[in-house]
Length: 294
Ligand SMILES: [Ca+2]
Image 1 (cartoon, rainbow, N blue to C red):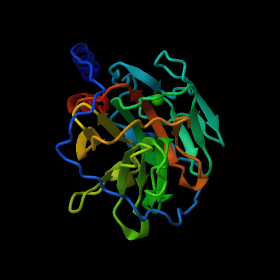
Image 2: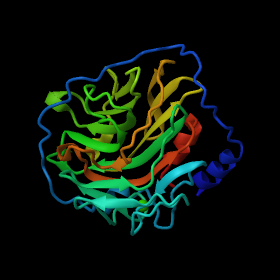
Image 3: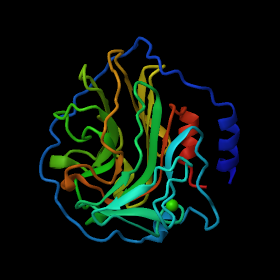
Image 4: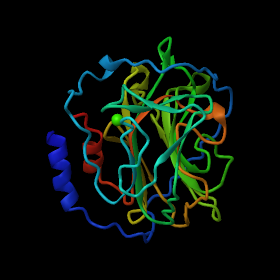
């Protein structure tokens, strides 16, 4: 409850981030190759291990995201957009909404063609935005059932640097070819073909704890004014990359998708809750509150 109150207070002093890009002080652009390969293709049910989220009290509600919300899903019994913008989710390929979320229900996907497609378009152009959600992977023998798990994508695919269509999003890689687990986010345009990719963990840092079977919060904040893209895990910034000034519009005619993209084998085998897109770059403090469990 403290988090909800604090978040509302913070939202009152939120300032409008301009959409004008400033010269980048840092232009670290890291191509993220080598993720193509067998994805395992395992499918099955997502365990309803309510005990995994025992730190959430029964009457606790999710933190209230700041405005302007573009789309927001609670997944509590349906895939309705609760932002007021009417961008309801379309459950496709067997995706469903059920219990066992961080709060109430969650979006459940089996990793084999399950997708939540967001109705109504969203085109941030060259403006700032934030995408945030909780996710968890289904475990098999202590590892994610699949190696490549799409979490959110609009436009270009997240898992390969070969597809240079514009877009943005992120996914979870459980450690392809014996590598460490990571979360990769991207922002791409079409004409200048520059990319901003963030990988976690960086060398020498602890792996993300997704293999514990619990929900974890991921947020990508793209600040075109400060020319920075930031990746947060469980409310903590784990990677930050400068956005080249040449990066143009990231708009795509493809709908935003959760759990999957055009290739069914790249879908998430797990669950997503409290997915939200906000039309400005959140501060680190705002992301921390959004990742709060109570
Ligand atoms: Ca929920």
